[in-house]
Image (cartoon, rainbow, N blue to C red; front, side, top):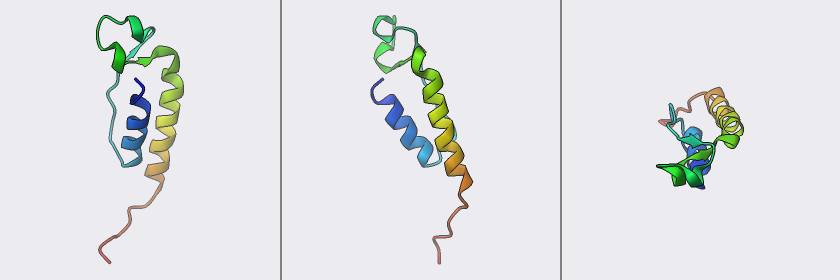
Amino acid sequence: ASSTSPLARAGMAVGLAGLFLESHPDPANAKCDGPSALPLAKLEQFLTQIKAIDDLVKSFDELDTEN
């Protein structure tokens, strides 16, 4: 899960339309995918940050890079 947050932030910063992630109350003891699961206690903070990045990116007008 150590790469989940930075990768999600980077994706949202470049306009990613959505995320798929796993969350678990105790990732270290999850029956599967524990190493990639975000701790459930961190989910609300994570989603708040992701939403803020998404809102910021969507607030910018698209740049005309052709001229």
